[in-house]
Image 1 (cartoon, rainbow, N blue to C red):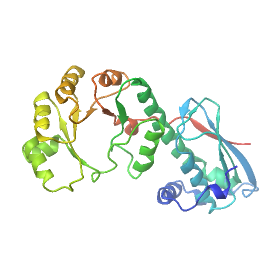
Image 2: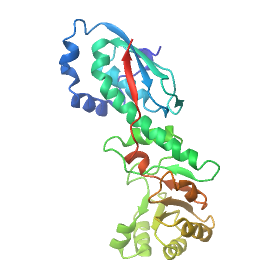
Image 3: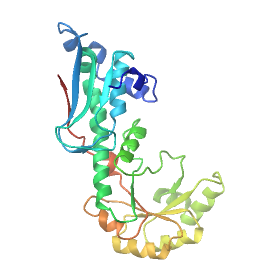
Image 4: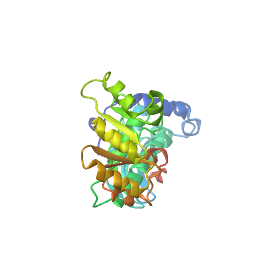
Length: 285
């Protein structure tokens, strides 16, 4: 089993974990604390109730560890993040004081169900475009304060991460273009002010804008809400001169068609803003 040697109470997630536990009132769990022996050492299993791709085992374990104050926890994952798990398959086994397990159960499962849901949906998208050169990427449409772990879950599902924040790169979108008075004016102004190693990507909505982007020698172009027939024409125009990303109203039904146009990346906001939490339970033994 993974004992305290495998878990560190000091992690980058402590603030998030603490806020989640405080939200649930775990230090005043009158139901559990009112039982005859809440300090009794017990064992519990975490079970998948459906097929899924696991993600978030470490933060689930850290949740129990934080609640315990850093001791008396044994947490043994039976699968790894990124692995497929079948219905009724054991995800992890743990031993701790009863109050730690019962008070921390909902918070830990919330993390695990949410992140595994993202990984599972991402894997579905990845599987739909198997055999193409395209890769599935996420967006910044994440739950506030959970971006790093939600983007981690996307990687567990086989996807890639787009920008983590506005400071990672320049993505010139429609509102930037309107504010500047056109694509060329926006790019020229931005290029004068940014660090020389920062890349510029521009959103294009039609073939005329694609041509304008080609004349500007930017590093990437985002084909936004284009029909796949127009998208294929744009890819032919670009001829590999820059990275090509497709975005806008992409779902499981049309993602294979989008990949067939020859784009390099397909960004899907639904990976994080619409993923359904998967069914996972915790049961005392």
